[in-house]
Image (cartoon, rainbow over all chains, first blue to last red; front, side, top):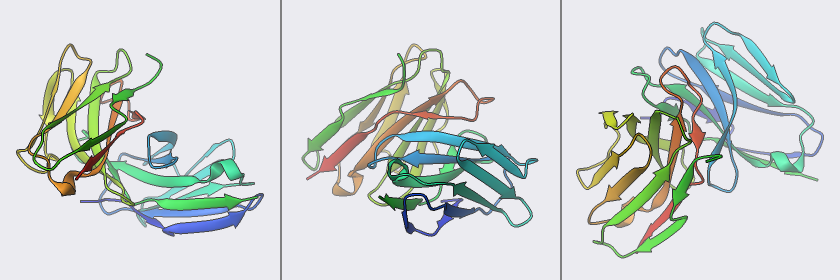
Length: 111
Length: 114
């Protein structure tokens, strides 16, 4: 079963605008990761945030984690057309043997 | 190699035939994972290898699915007697091990069962 659920399912913005995607999960986690997928193929790791962290930055990416609400958000600032992709949050399963992915948010950035 | 590679990139097969999908992980990565992604969906975990052993096969959807790994390197996912619902992108990922949470994904194999 899927652990994370992203919201919204789809997001369309103009270049230069910020994009915010949210992820909710059900059980306790050790960490939460965000991945990007272009054209329905391989995923690229973006950022990992641990359960004892509240916020993390990487370039134009900002991730927050609220373990009390079991939610995370990914903010992409000053978006570019190249950011067009699907974004997935993933949490580790209890055994630590796999990642559990949500259905993803499809982001479209138009120039 | 520089990254995880998978072959073939695309596979079209007829219902009832067997298919083999190959994954070459990043050299030195002890952990290897197989996932399945149906159109418009997230990834479904299939199986996890640590070395050549598979301590977690819980995601394999039926006994038609099997996987093996040899030399702590290449892995093969085999689907026997394929069905149309097996059509999906099959993604392989590797990581340095249980203490390395980041998984590095291959480009996937797109399987279409007619």
